[in-house]
Image 1 (cartoon, rainbow, N blue to C red):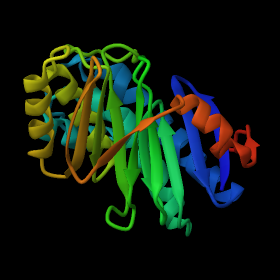
Image 2: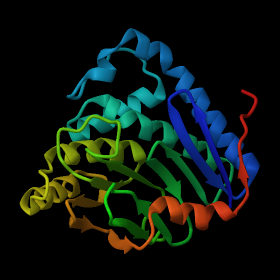
Image 3: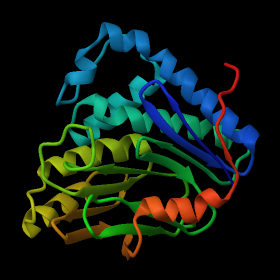
Image 4: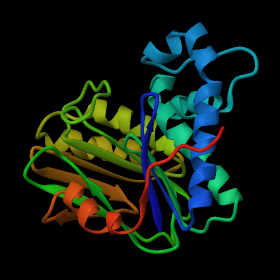
Length: 251
């Protein structure tokens, strides 16, 4: 696997696949889609600030359309889905180019397809961190999103160290993790269990993990494990032993 870490505008990206050319395709698509939505965002600031689903008339940029659709399923504002939607579209282009294994992470929102078991590390901001073992033979293409009231810049009305949602795509996972994160009360096991049930009741969600004040609740097709090292150390000591490239394609 080859790995690219780079930034574009506000996005902090990690793109991985078997070839540099495939990574180039994913990054080019991400940049294309991000540029395509700027005019819409400038003309429709309510998209950015709304806390509930919205409808927009006329033809929409694809990333905006996916965000609006996913936010309606989760009952949150459409901006909550946008980072995941952009990751989904980049992954889509990588898979169309023939990639069998591909990952696009956009600021913690992950769109991926892997043909092997994968461990996803989750940083909680506390002593204990956890990971998810994903048996990708039973998932196929998936989206993973983490919401946190402690270690994320995104708005959250709840009090969870980490809410992780696995769904059929990253746009939906992004929206649902926001909704679920808003429902968690600090260290309250009942609110955590109810939040997991809420997530798993939404069509397209495959699993959910809620971690708050060293309590953990999970449901669906997901298996959390405790990590001895932080996800950052695991990333540095394992995945990034492969080639790392920092480049921008011609677009």
